[in-house]
Image (cartoon, rainbow, N blue to C red; front, side):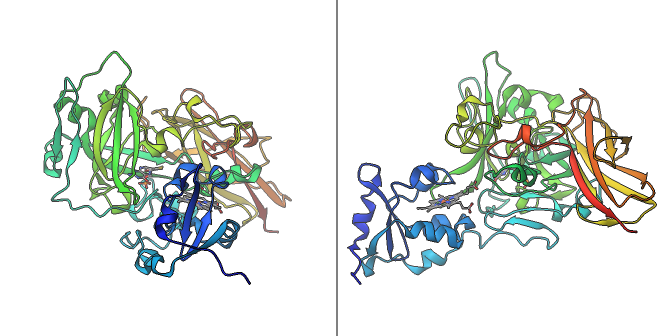
Length: 467
Ligand code: HEM
Ligand code: MTE
């Protein structure tokens, strides 16, 4: 066998562009991945962060790479080995950026451990109108920062016509405390049903990427007013930056239109309490944004910086993710700039009981679930069918009565239905209607999109009837 070519760390680090070739290392092995960059499922720009150096610190962040098929793929690009003295120190290989993440509740169904993404199981999700903090769904893109409440400062960046503020937690407590019940839903909720139509890129959320809490904090409009911001005629956006970051210092970010931020009726919060407790670390301790009626992605956690800008946030998650496309758009043709960022979400509902594949008793069956719509639109009705959508009955709506145009929280619903005699199986379906009479589409295929977002077709559960 031929001995491998040996390279120095310096040689590897000079290969960071298509012209020179793009090289990376893993352990002592050297790879030329120039041809792979454009094919990377996580996007070329992410891969390029590791160009000319070791993959370990980046792969430690995205455990998706700890799979044999990823290692096999990389092996095809091997060109040699590192000088033994240049091998990456093992501390870097083993240092785990997630080592400091909080302990989580064992009931959560984990979709990804690093970063941590998990949902409550359906049988717990609708047990309580207010989701208990330990089982509230968690959607993290990065390690959870460990922030000291005593030294924490929220930076509100000034511009001509406004001043900068640096607010401690005590400063935030001095603003009038505002408390509201708000449901958060991830754009990827129910993505697993889209995957059944055709593969999509993203975490396999089932019906649980949604939860409800009582949030308390200062209203964003009060804080912006103190900094001297006013509504302006020209388009403007409030950009938020989280204090969670990757090894290159890239932080999570997102934005909402200034008009929503400045509208007292929109009730956008800089929240420091969740269900009467300080925010748990996973949910943004010590301060997060809560934007009622708007997709989870804009509800920035571990908030460090707020600024008013003429353009939307330049964050990857504002511009290159969380957008919807036609089913015909694929990763070769997608033009992220052509679609608006998701803000208000469409009407949604799902069945949490019984679950798909379960056996129910003959006689009577209890069907339970949740329904919610974005933009403060109230759910006015949930229709349930036992026969795949041929006939319908209206479910009983439980939970807080919602205020007109400020229906920020879900309704739980249930239906006690007679199981028709002799029936061996049931195709249970639910669909909600909001107060704009928006309805859910009946099937997934026509709303399928490459990122698997906005999955809100009728929810269907197939069960057997005990004989
Ligand atoms: C996903 C390979 C470098 C971030 C993936 C997947 C493969 C892959 C095969 C899909 C895995 C699956 O879904 O089963 C590689 C190779 C790399 C590389 C061969 C180096 C040559 C990087 C770097 C980063 C990164 C440096 C981050 C800085 C990601 C992310 C995803 C991903 C975030 C998940 C995408 C999603 O599902 O949204 N990578 N990767 N990758 N990669 Fe990489
Ligand atoms: N904020 C920061 N700083 N970092 C993040 O990864 N994830 C966003 C949003 N805010 C995220 C963030 C997404 S996509 C969602 S759906 C919600 O947080 C989830 O909030 P939760 O984890 O409290 O349920």
